[in-house]
Image (cartoon, rainbow, N blue to C red; front, side):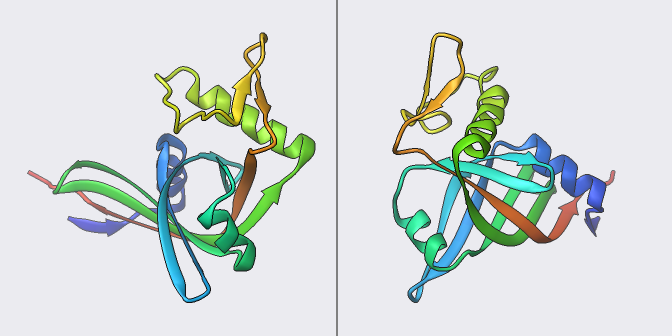
Length: 151
């Protein structure tokens, strides 16, 4: 059976996944890149170092975000959302980075989940280095689909 996810199911999928795909477009180029993220109060929160995706989102803040969960080819869920990129600064950035740190710490984290720009101090709290850019995607529109094999 194919179907649409309701708002509660969309929130659940966004809350439980750790990796999504961020799509941005600027200067005639479309770029899609995997990102680790948290879902917080209806927004997608990410971190990055300066690079192509940040350069593109600063030029055109309209972005697309996708995440999914696949049990197998006949049992899956997917969410696509559209929103606006916004860089976080100072205390807001530190708070968002702390929320990411709290979610990812219980997992076996890798360099891409909490890279060097999320250094920790002796209290195990992230200390954003100058290279850290924390940002959110303020979601404006979301849609979700699923397939579930019924026996």
